[in-house]
Length: 368
Image (cartoon, rainbow, N blue to C red):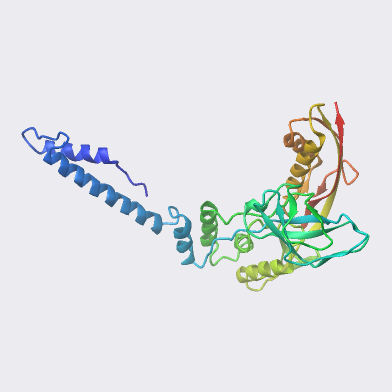
């Protein structure tokens, strides 16, 4: 529905033209006249009524609703907006004197970015740094969901919780996984899919069920195939990943329950995580003499990690993409050579049910 809206001046001009057109003599409509005051007062009421119409319109159609109004609209159909997700990653905790004291790092211990804007808590612990071992790598998760937790490598360097036997913290790899709550635009698109898949036991219905569990899920739906890859008529095998390459059992259970609600009668389903393939990359960069090698390496590292760790289920890592990512990461890169994936010049992944993640990355730098 498209409304023809008018501003205050247009309303006054239209009313003045109508009044003058209905009168045989000239009417005084100068500023300050009685008739002008009546018309301006009526125009003000018209603007208010126009505003009320717009307010009603924004709340009665999903296409024009935003924020809480959109949430209220879809809740009548049993839908909810997908929540924001937490960024996560790994940090290295180290000691200046590893030979004198061990360290135990419990869940909930916190670390922060240099500016103190982001805090991360230890998860999947506890962890132990034995006597004689200088450092230990632990998993952490942002305490607040959203994209702000996707920090770059090297910025988490403050201990938020005092840990005996630990003196420093660093994050060698950028954090990923944090995402804001589902946008209004994405919500509207998913609602269309929701309506189109009601009472349908189709692949699109399965897709809607999977993508409604959590944001950023990638998946592969295999029909008439068992979990072990053998032929099994009437069976649907779903492979799903949340970006980690090793989704938690709770997530797989949630996806399984969602798919089970929309599967065709007489069929069976199974849900599993992907086969994780770690890509070992080695390459040589050529940079100008004025460039800072450490900064260039960090930029290239971040670009490669972001791209590779964002590949979905079944997507291949093409060796031809590596050089382009390096050039785009830093303008100081003048040449990329000796690129190898897992020691060869071939691609990695691309098979159904596999997902590729970055493993060892060796970058050599030549200064021209």
